[in-house]
Image 1 (cartoon, helix red, strand yellow):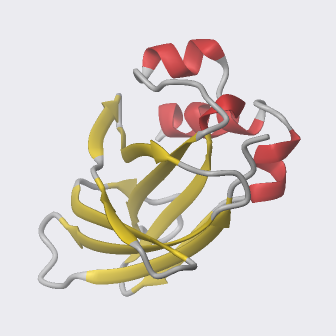
Image 2 (cartoon, one colour):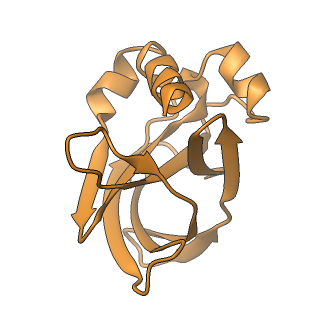
Length: 147
């Protein structure tokens, strides 16, 4: 969890663009699904290198983490099966391949993809936490600026 916080802090320190994006979360029974999307140019060179992400104004990155609710605690990161589809405003959709990243106790799923200037993508996530009998849906929408 500490390293996930470090990664989130690194994203937050990348600039005002990240602050304007904010982080989205979807609360489902027993879990919180954290999800955000941004252009990769806001990542520091060190973060991009560490996670093998190409920094570019025309590349987007989706970041998803699943936290099991734990009473009186910040929660416990859990592994999950996560799939993501992005649909633009013209109705064209594409799968976003996600890869699992484990860093200490932190577990998150990241995927990068091309974006056009002023493109809005609606993301549909399907999340099945390990050990959970259910699959949960989460949605987010993000407009990207690549100029």
